[in-house]
Length: 157
Image (cartoon, rainbow, N blue to C red):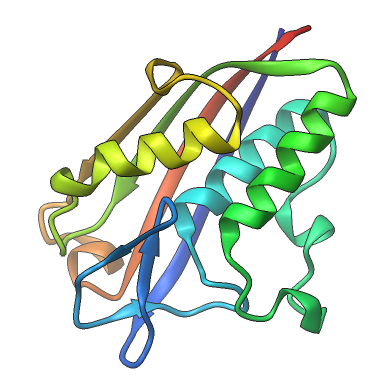
């Protein structure tokens, strides 16, 4: 078994779409980044890459490479899942926490789980996604950004 942890944070800004877990979320601001800035999927990618000992998302998809400008982060996750399968691992389970003061995310969590399960070629019961606020504390509480933590267990095939 291999365990990995991933963390990512992006700043909220005007003029961008808010994408989390591959879902477009209605909000007045979106996340700033080279790709679609899907902080949730970036944390998941980092967790898997960490479990495999393959570095992080920046090593595989550098923000200096124009090929990744505006890219859908689900495409990045599917590539990471391919790396996982090439090394003879499959998903055991994934646990993710998103910290966002606003918007409320509860109505989107099931769709996020379905997207991630599809990208892992797995089942939604292997994935847990939680959303929380920071009770108005810190950059998340001031609605300056959103962060995500992910922990993954990979099983040998």
